[in-house]
Image 1 (cartoon, rainbow, N blue to C red):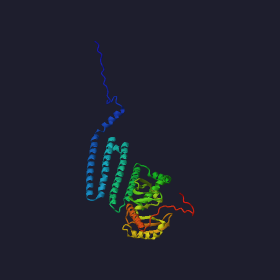
Image 2 (tube, one colour; image 1 turned 60 degrees about the horizontal axis):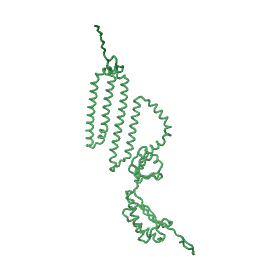
Image 3 (cartoon, rainbow, N blue to C red; image 1 turned 90 degrees about the vertical axis):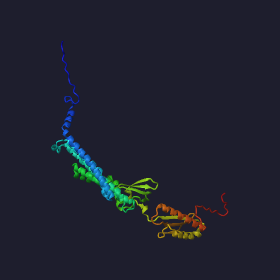
Image 4 (cartoon, helix red, strand yellow; image 1 turned 45 degrees about the horizontal axis):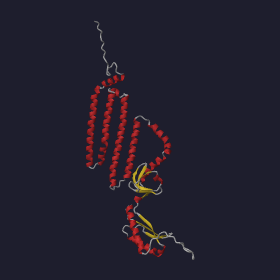
Length: 387
């Protein structure tokens, strides 16, 4: 009986070196060569976790103690740096671990292109964290300094907000320039290019520059501040100031509609600051009938006496009631007076109402009456009146 030998072959799996793709073999070899680094990398990450927890606890405790002791500046600094510092710890730990894994040989790591690129990325992210920390601290100091303004402090919330915006922009510009210098960008070329292009930018962005200049002028000349009521009579715009930025100013109209104005408008248009008025002027006309001509002087004198005796009218300011005009159907007297200092527009409106009611009583007391538009037709003698 013939026996036929059987050849039993082995089936190679994806992990077999005989049939595995080249990239797989390289990856396996790459990982096997770095097995000794797993323990140091693990220790590094655990150390980062421990340092993160400790710094967060210490800074939180320090901030609470400074707040309780009245040292709010130190408290704000500690609370502002906590999160950026924690991210910085993890950033350094993770990027160092990646550098170790990419190039395990410490001697070659300095010349390794991959390790160098990782270090450059780390430097850029560190700069971003520094910028975030500084602007975060600026915003918190702004909020801290703005609190006394609402309680009547002499500090001006408008200046605080504007300076906060200015320093935030300055910080990010500095971070950008430092980053460009760090990555080897030729700053001389950038400055030269900026000088050459500044002329073109001046014409292209002249409106932007006008608005920025207008914002700076508002900051230093302070024609109004947040919370003031202003009026641009030439534009027919009025409202309360809600926000003053470097580029634009936001108002809230008396009809509660937001109004956004470019700051350049304040460089050319007159601004009426209604909140800066020391007194509220009240002025209106009194129209008597032509039949009451004999009572004009008496009515005017008694109205003047009433204003001088009124407890809400400032007798040290102008008080005037004069006969000003022969109207089409009335004898016109003009009344002018001022409220006491510090009156709001609502209080002045009620004062105006009270004065007008008292004027009506004086007119009726003298047997006179207010005129209304009338038309008199004179017919020649013998002419029949129309039916």
